[in-house]
Structure formats: C-alpha cells, structure tokens
Image (tube, rainbow, N blue to C red; front, side):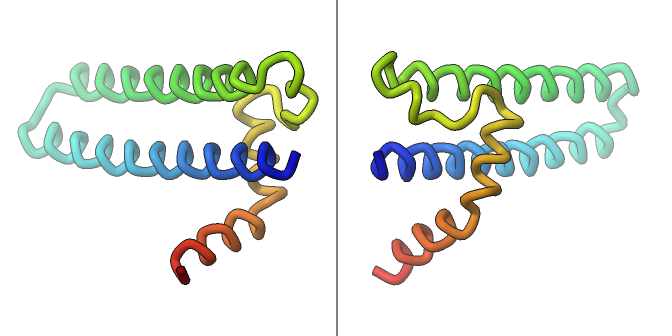
Length: 106
C-alpha cells in the first residue's frame, strides 16, 4: 500500500512539473505572438487552445492514473478528479519534498 501511495505522489508531482513547463512554453509563445504583432484573434485562439489542451491533459491523466490501479486497488486511490488529486498532493507535500531531497542527496 505504501508503494502505491508513493507512486501516486510521484506521478502527480511529475504531472504538475510538466504543466509548469508547459506554462513557460505558453508564455514564450505568447511573447513571440506579441512581438510579431499577431492579431488579437490569433492570440485569443492560441490561449483558448492552450486552455483546452491543459484541461484535457488533466482529465485524462487522472482517469488513466485511477484506471491503472485496476478494480482491486481502486480503494487505494484517494482522489477522483484533478482538484482532489491536487488536494491529495498538497496534503502530502512534505512527503514529496522528502522523497525529492533523498534523491538529490544520493
């Protein structure tokens, strides 16, 4: 059970870090669009597409994580959606930090 718990935390942490990097790339692209004087319509379309991509990614990631546990281990999953997963990650923040620090110290 502890292995499942740690795996969930690491998977969520990696997902959040990936989304953070996506936001940097999004902002970089917005800067380029603004520098090239792209139309407001193109900027809005880009922002909307990014929002849709992120929303879909979050939904699919959580569904896949839950499905990966199979019926037998579903009771070990303490979240049902993105918001619940983020609450779970926040609740276990110190444990994630400890895991990362252990890895860096090895």
